[in-house]
Image (cartoon, rainbow, N blue to C red; front, side, top):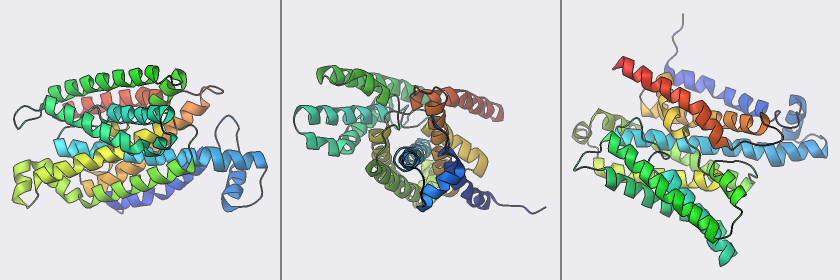
Length: 334
């Protein structure tokens, strides 16, 4: 029997991603045969309705889902490595809530003062996400230690604080409460190609970045002192991961709202399947995160048709039992 390394197994699995995306184009309130999807993608003639559904509605939505899922997953993986904490992820640390506050603030200011501010939504999200992460970190830190319990409690507090800020902005800015609330729970609806390109480029760039520094993340998992012995500038690396991860989260949240559990459970699954080496688990997290989010979005837009469920609800329903299983499995191993 030929033994295949985990790295090669991951590369072999990549072509299935294209097949998976192709199949998801078929499902929705209107079923479209695979042959018609293939024709539309290669430029052959299909009905005008099918062309609009495939190229303007479903394809950008699926690609955005892949990008957002990848972005959240690699960020969660990097945060877990940086803090040596299996519970660290953008959602729990309050970064997602902070980024959502910034995104809503940009839209409120655009509505009240300058419509052009809407094009800088991700900048507002990034600045607010940085602020949220700093508050979480400073509140939880005790000396040179970062206790797990304090980290979680601090993240909960920051989430509540920025959640209250979002509610204030919605009411004060007289925005559509129902539409904004739906977006905050996570939604890929109305995905435009500009968002797809921006999020996609960010996800690819950040996946490559975290993969390149994977050997340093491996060293940090062994311990900060051990990492210092092999030449890793630990504090500088933490700051870089902190800033890059917050930027990645801000881009994802500004495009899709708050989506939990992706950055929490996917890195665990990637490490379980492909090993703890971050040079492999990072790209694996990106692919698995994108697939997971697209599956959840497909369920959200088809299972309750003609209504649509917020994607954050589906990720929570699926992610909660998976995370419980991971926690119990880790407890048995320990």
